[in-house]
Length: 273
Image 1: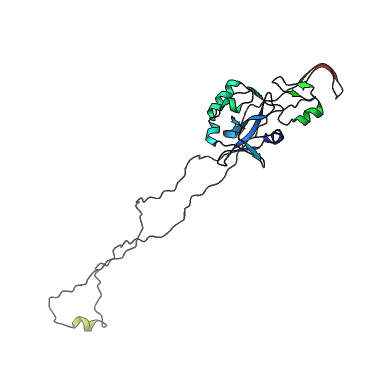
Image 2 (image 1 turned 90 degrees about the vertical axis):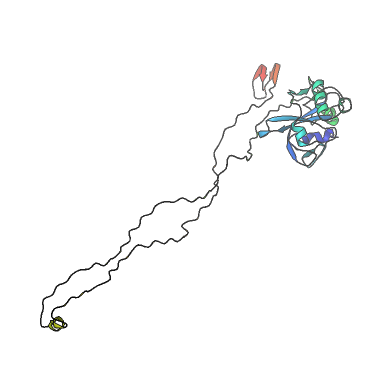
């Protein structure tokens, strides 16, 4: 059970589920109208904390800035969506108790809960005096606390697509010029001179003869070899850009009626803070 003293530090703490997993940040604390005991918290869940889920505090514990509850994260996120507006109705509480499998009569000390005196103890009330009255139930001291919501934007990493390398074989025609040589027969004639007279007179004077030569030529020969030409790898690069997100936030305003002296030096009948 969460006591009044611990209630001071609950808002802004981290809510942990029954398995020790982080659920989200506690955004609001709701107190019982009659007793002022902490009864519910609203935890910010969903993308950028845009969703609020209500969780009962009847079996919760708080230490080290973490609020632990005996419920699974999925059960908390699936809780009925309720627009409390600072106060839970009895019908809303009944729906929530049913969702968490609790008895509404055992879990609820009274029908209404409110935000506003999360950090106030009996000692604080006695010290300041009971001079105000919260329209939702409990009395307050001589000052109001004005609160406002502020955006906390963050990022989450999601899959944006896939990239892959694929290698395949294709065939193309390649032309290479290859110089080749070939032999051909030619006839050479030389006159009879004293130098070749002996060769010319060797043999019979009149006869039949044949002379034969073998002609050769070169033909192109094609061979192939496989050689590595480059290395290709798939890697990632991080590019940073700024995206603007827009969300509505609530701010409390305080109106003052009557003859009031502004400490900044002006007197007005109605001031808006």
